[in-house]
Image 1 (cartoon, rainbow, N blue to C red):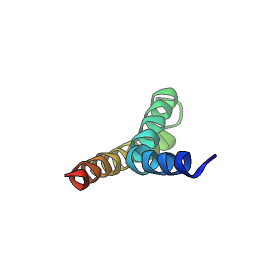
Image 2: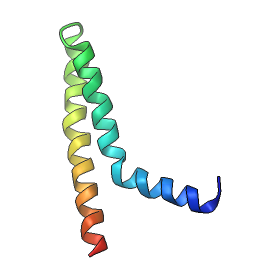
Image 3: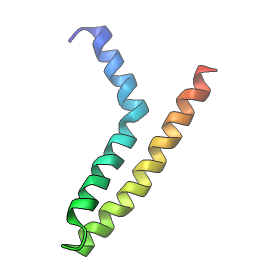
Length: 66
């Protein structure tokens, strides 16, 4: 990868990384619903925390552009 592609990947990851992790936790919560309540609870908390972090990351990048 060239330097330019690497910098695009780093910018994308810093902006949307939290939301991608929250989405994957949400998919895992849906799949494991009812089978293992401890795992479901932990992943549900992960959805809330990572989703919140992802939203604040997007807000931060929008305010930095202004």
